[in-house]
Amino acid sequence: MNKLEHLAIIMDGNGRWAKKRGLNRTKGHEKGAEVVRDITTYCANNSEIKTLTLYAFSTENWKRPKLEVEFLMKLLDKYLTKESKVYQEQDVKFETIGNLEPFSKKLKDTIAKTKEATKNNRKLTQILALNYGARDEIIRAINSLISKNIEVTEESLSKALDTPYSDVDLLIRTSGEQRLSNYLLWQSAYAELAFTKTLWPDFTPKELEEIIQNYKTRERKFGGI
Image (cartoon, rainbow, N blue to C red; front, side, top):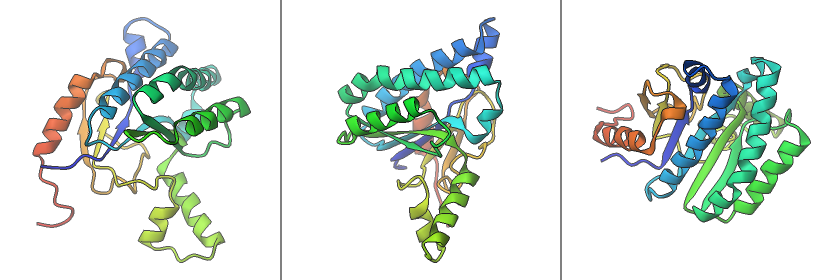
């Protein structure tokens, strides 16, 4: 039976969820944030899952309308502040990957404060991919190695990436789209992929459990026979 230590999710469909209901896209993002709490809590209580990485804001998302981007930044700040108690109750450590430099000082301070407050939690590590793109991550890692005069090898590059965690075992994308969208390309080299038509705001721990059970039945060969 396949182990599942690292689960990654592309949380897609917030805007479409809102549009179907005649709502502003921001309402979809607000509902999606609630689902993040539910899924994180489920994973924290699954003793096998050690890392949950969620695609929250990509390097390409800056192309969205300015007002929507500003709302997403405020929503993230609000989410982290509000969820601080949940992180502690569920024994969840909070981390991020991606380039945080473009974010406001206020948001960066909230992120740093949340990391510090949860650094000793052990049940689950929740990683939010923020201003993240796999190509950007790989390029930054290579440039970092070159600047330190370190030979670029598979091992050294893996350690230089934003994600010094285990490779992804299972990667899920919601909303029916079937592409990786520049997400964890290096870490997902041998990940099992699962796509669901469910929009992220409608995604539930029950459906996640069903996907995990399907994953358990798959045969992972890692290039072998």
